Amino acid sequence: MTGSTQHFLERVHRQEYGQLLATLIGWLGDFDLAEEALQDAFLAALEHWQRDGVPHKPGAWLTTTARRKAIDRLRRNRSDGLEPERLETLPPAQLAVTDNDDEVGEIPDERLRLIFTCCHPALPLEQQIALTLHTLGGLTTAEIATAFLVPTPTIAQRLVRAKRKIKDSGIPYYVPPAHLLAERLDSVLTVLYLIFTEGYAASSGDALIRHELCDDAIRMCRVTELLIRRTQTQVSPAQHAEVLGLLAMMLLHHSRRAARVGPRGELILLHEQDRSLWNRRDIQEGLALVDKAFNMRHVGPYQLQAAISALHASAATAEATDWPQIAALYGELRRHADTPIIQLNQAVAISMAASPARGLRLLEPLAGALNGYAPYHLARADMLRRSGQLDSARAAYGVALDLTHNQVERDFILGRIATLGDDIRRLSSL
Image (cartoon, rainbow, N blue to C red; front, top):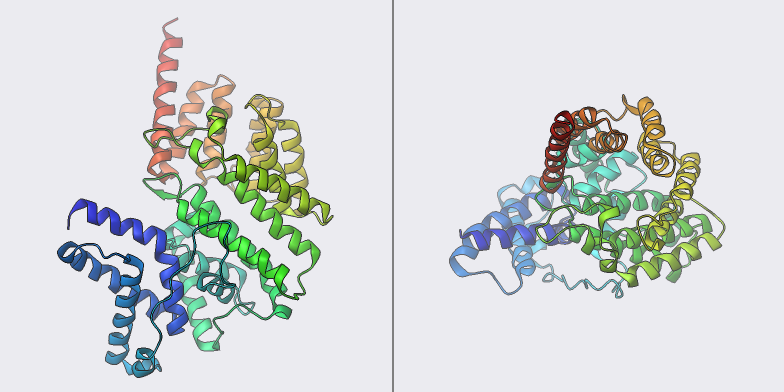
């Protein structure tokens, strides 16, 4: 297979895996069978696309092939309890889902059905999240484990148990009726947040941003908000405000996408970014959504995170950033969810608003909980560097490097280590 075709197939996998799998699960009602059939289809593409060329509609080709592979599997093993003849009568794939953020299309699409199925209250929250990230986001068990700071076998067990529960309990594959929407909404928002987070800062691979995950999370958050407005739901004003807050936060973060990487794909930190490249349309919409959410007078954690993003987006320069207000908002956020990661973010804000030394003191109690978390060591390294403790900073960057699997971030850390080495040698020669 040529390198260009291989690269194209990998891109199709990144961009369309979640939609393809959601469609197959909708047909089959079986997570494992759908995943196996889709994997068979991608393997078939390795052979056919090289020989016959890339099809005009790769997603449709993969869906049709996966459907046939599923039927073949069922014919070989009729103990699955599904009749192949019934599958053969299914309509052809309908994959026309718009990528335009302003066009949410039909409510709901297959991906939203998948999220609500995975977020059924019969499943424990940790299983809901792991299953959705794996099926819809296409994240590996190792990537999910990294996001949750737990061992990979733990995530694997959660996935197995969740799929078995859905199959054994006959959990329906649909968006719940209006009166049941509220009980699943919090889990849905958590999943969308985590999908966006993985897209915004990919935990592995050779690209910093997985745009398809960011776009999917934003689009499905739009659809969820529209679903609330168009149906007579029992969603509370507090929940609705949080949906708006999450959408605002994602738009404000993603507005910086063009400035976050340089011409060679290298990482550009926030304070070094060319702010003229920020997407003003996304920023304006995000700011308006923050105002709308806060005017509902039911402040929650997503709204507070959106407000923090709004302060960054509103600063004309890095120096104009209102770090004291950002630190205060993190303090308020801790009243809702006092997690080590939020404490880490507050420490970073305080280090910018007050001093690196004060930030370092706040990091000390977090060492045990976040020792395996690369951003903790990166934050500590930066504070040590800014306080002039170059040897310690270099060591902290080394720890972060060992914990980092994304190549863009690894290159950035290696650059920091090299620069600090030059600075240490220069100081020692004085």
